[in-house]
Image (tube, rainbow over all chains, first blue to last red; front, side, top):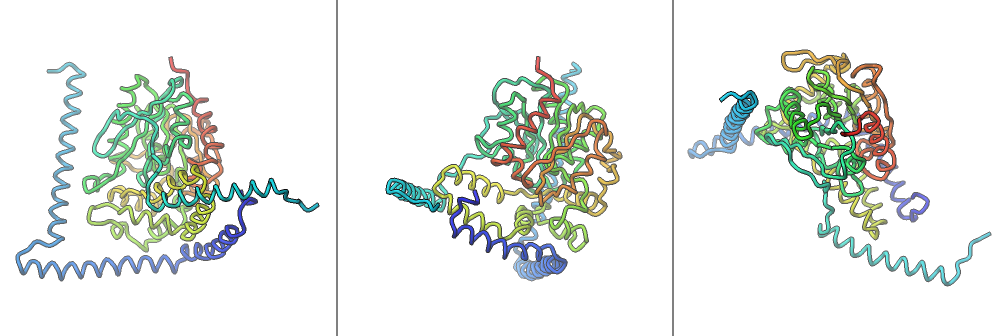
Length: 103
Length: 362
C-alpha cells in the first residue's frame, strides 16, 4: 500500500513518473514514429546490401549463402504446408466416410 | 499526541526487519540465479484436439455443473497461460472451480509453416474443427465462446459468419473494434509510415521481438518502478512469485503469422473495416450484427493497449442489440485478467455472467 512504502521507494516512484511521462509522450509523437520507420528502413537496406556482397563472394567460391538456405527453407515450408493440408483433407474424408458408413 | 515506542515494539520491529533482510537475501539470490521460478499454466488439462501448432485443452477441475462448455479463443499475439498464470491467480481455475467446463484454444508458436495462415484459416478452418472437438468431447451442442483481445475478433467473425455456429454466449474480453482508437501501438502502421512487409522476417512472420518492443515502448520506464517495488517486497515469497510469473509472460511473445498480419493491417487498421459492421472473409461478407448468442463486452478501464474507446463500439455493432451487455472492469489490458484486482472484480463478475446465461448440466 502506498502509505506503507518506505521513503526511498516513494522517491524512486516519483522520479520514475517525472521521467516516464515525458518519455511516454515522446514515444507517441510523430518525430518518434518517423525515427522508427527511418531506422527500420535503413537497417533493412544495410542488411540487404551486406547480404548482397557476402552472397556474391560465396557464390564466386561456389558456396551457398544464407539467402540460398533461406529460399530452400521457404520452399520446404511451402511443401510441408501443402502436405499437411492434404493429410488434413484425407483425414476428414476418412472421417466423413466412416460416419456415413461408406466403405 | 506523538506516539511513543516501547522497548517491546522496538524489539519486534528489529526482529521483523532482520527476518525480512534474511528473506530478501535468500529470494534475491534465487531471483538472480533464476531458480524457484513459478509454474505457469498449472491447472491440469487434457489435450483433446490438435492440428498443426494449435491445441485444444480441456481443463480438469471440480464437477461440471453448468453448460454449455466455455471455449476460450486466445489472441495470436501472446501466450495463453496469462489466463492460467498460477494457482490461486488463474481465470481458468476460477471458472473451472465455479462448475464450468472450460476449454482453451491455444495457437502455439508459429514458424515458417504458419506464415500463410490468414484470418480465414483461423476463423473458417481451425475454429470450426476445434468446436467440433468440443462438441464431440462434451456431447453438448451449444458453446460459450470467449475471445481475448484479437481472439475476440476471431470469435465474433465465427459467431457472425456461420449459421451452424450454435453460440449461446459470446464473451469478448478487451476486443478491439475501432482501430482508429488503438493508439501508439498501431499508429506506425495505420499512417503508412511502415508497411507490414517491413516488419516481416525471413520466416514470413512478424518476429516476437518486434511485438515485445512495441509493448515495451508504450511505457519504457515502468520497469524501473516495477524493479524498485520488487526490491522492497523481495522478502515476500508470494509477491516474488507473482512478479516472476508476470515478468516471464510479458517477455514471452510469439511470432505473428505474416498473412494474418498483412490482413490485420490492411483491413482492420488502415480501412478500420470492423467499424462498418461488415468484413470480407474468404468469398463471403460477414455482418457482425448476425453474431449469435448473448454478447458480453468486457473492457478494462485503464487499458492502454486496447483502450476503452476501441472496444465500446462492440455495443453498436456485434450481435443482436437486445442481447448485448457491457462490463467495465478496473485494471489494464493484462491486469484485468490476472492479479489481485482480477480476482476481486473480473473473475467473479465474468463467472456470474456466464453462469447466469448457462444452464444446469443434466
